[in-house]
Length: 391
Image (cartoon, rainbow, N blue to C red; front, side, top):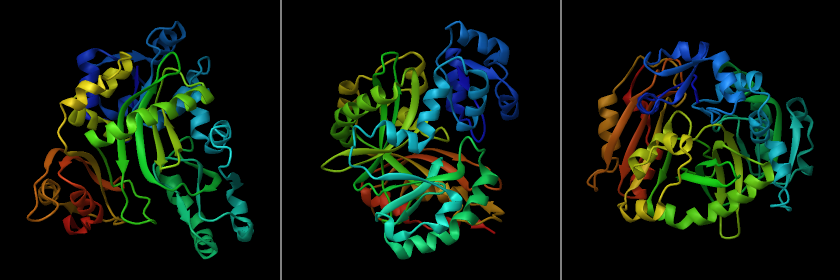
C-alpha cells in the first residue's frame, strides 16, 4: 500500500500505482496532492483493517511526512518500532555497536551544545540532528575552531528547519556527535524481506566538491559500482537487518566505505531515495523499484549488468543556492547544460527534467541524466545555477 504525502509524487510512481492496481491510502495528505481519481484508493479505516488482517501489509511512503500517520494508526504492527530505530540515530548506533565496537558517538541536547568542553571532544567529528532528513542540520567539524563557529549558527539554523519539516522528519531538540567516517559515500535503496534478508535495488555513489560539502546535489550509479559493491553491501546489510530485526521494510541507507570497512551513516525508513529519485532504477537498470518491493522480487543482477553500458546514471537536484526571491528559471538553458556539462566533450543524455515549485521549496528541478565520465559529474557539482535564475 502506498502512503503518499508532500512534498512530491512523481508521475512514474503514480502511473505504477495505477497500472498495477496497488492500493493508495485515501487521507487528507493524499487529497492535497490531487492524485489521479482512478487510483485504487483505500479509505483510512479499510486500509487499517486490511493491514490488521495481514492483507496489503507491505507499506511504502514516498515521503517521511507519512510517518506520523503510521505511528498513530499502525501501532499494532512492528512498523513503528522499525521506523523509530532508524530515525533515532543514537539508538541506531547503539544497536549496531557490536558490528563497530570502536566507533565513537554520543548524544547531546541542543541546549548543551554551547556549554560542551570542546577539548573533551574527539575531532574530526560530525554534529547532526538525532532525527534528521537529507543533509539538513549536518555539520562536519574538524577542530576546536570549527566547533566554536558552528555553535554560533546551530540555533539559528534550527529555526529554519522547523519551518520546512515536521518534527517526525527533522527533530532538532537533540543532536548526536559521532566520529567522522572516512571514505567514499554511497547510498543504497533496499528492502528487507519477510526473512530479514536485504534485497538491494540500487547503489549510488555520492560525490562532493570538497571535504566541507554536505550537499545532496548529485548521486550516480553504474555497472562498475554495482559490480564492486553489491556483494560487499549485501553482507553488511544482512548484519544490520539482524541487529535491528528489519522485516518487510523498505529503506534508503547512506554509508561510507573505505579499504577497512563500510560504515552506515543513517537509515531513512519506509522509502527509497527521496523526492522519488529512486525512479533512477528505471533508467539505469530497467527495473521498477516499487514493483520489486510490493511483489517481493529480486533483481537478476547478473543479467542486468551484462546488458548495461559503461555510462554514469545520475539523478541531480537543482538547488536554489540560498536565493529566496526567484522570479523565473530558464529551464531550457539548464536542460542544455545537463546534456553537455563539459564543453567539447562527449555529450551525456538527459532522460527527464522535473520542474519543482521553487517558490515553496529550496530546489527548482530534479533531473535524470547519463554522463560519460566523472569530469562531467564534477562540472554539475561545481556549477553555479544562479545564472539560470531571474531574481
